[in-house]
Amino acid sequence: MAEQELCFEDVNEGDSIPELVKEPVTRVQLVKYAGASGDFNPLHTVEDFAKKAGFDQPIAHGMLSMAFVGQFLTDWLPKGSLKKLGVRFTAVTFPGDTVTCKGQITKKYQEGSDNLVEMDIWGETQQGQKTVQGHAVAALPSRG
Image (cartoon, rainbow, N blue to C red):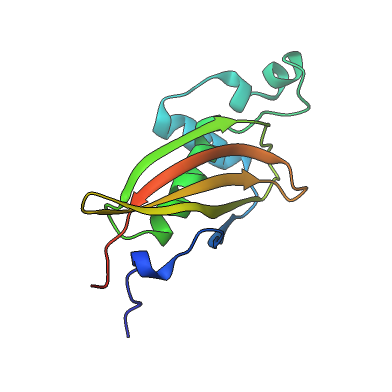
């Protein structure tokens, strides 16, 4: 039996969004992301360059962390309901880090014919370090 689509009536202010865990980031993943995104900054793939920049190893692309949070939302929300997504990068993600994407409903309201839900969202490492934080808005269908 297919899972029922998330509706406006299913969420309340203060509710947590089901987490998405992204298994440890790998260096191969960073190379693949560089190729897919066109971001070939050696900070993300070349150990000596990263060390000269003050890091022990290459660091993950900030946009990769944002992509994790985007997937977290689009996996949970009905197709086409995400209306706004904005994030800021607050810490570095390294190869070996497991990123857990989390969120909470902060506001639920109707505006015109739209059923809107606002959410605080973030990704954090296994140490609890938030690497990306943001806000999103979705328009959810109604059961009625």
